Image (spheres, rainbow, N blue to C red):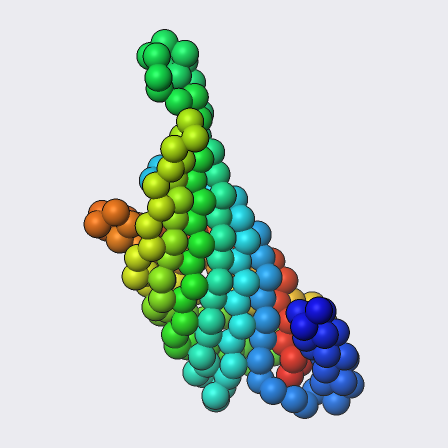
Amino acid sequence: MKLVALLVSLFFSAALFAQNNSGPDLDVYGAYAHGSNFGIGQSGWLGSAAYSFSDRLAAEADLSGGYGSKSLGPLGVIIPGLPNTIHSHMHSFDVGPRVMFRNSSDKADAFGHLLFGFSHTNVSAAGAGQSDTSFSWALGGGADYFFKSHLGARVQLDWLRTNFFSQGDNHARFAIGLVYSFRGR
């Protein structure tokens, strides 16, 4: 119930800010994301919010989830006891600074970020699974194009680093979605 109240108040706040281009310098992003975990391709989602302290610097929080499966093909049939499919999911929460590069046209801008936090994974096959949580960091950036005063599209590419099961691993993550700026352009 509290979540519904929060979403309703954010919606009406956005409408008020849209009328006069004032309000917090905050943007919210929701996207489809694709990445990998232990060689398993994962489709999922990414959400982030960033509050700008100036034209160039913001604080960002990023939350993502990815889910995937990989078939072992004929090996699962040939070798007894070997599972047919491996399932994997990974969630990450990272925060940190964002540096922005704004275009004078006010339609497009770009950014880079370095985020720190934690990630959690679960890998399972044939009813048995293992999970782990580790420190993570993400280095990357993206570009926005605003087709309305407050609404635009964003493409983002990150390099996410984790240390699951005491093994360092790199995860490329691509995301594309919509960004809403409460301040407007």
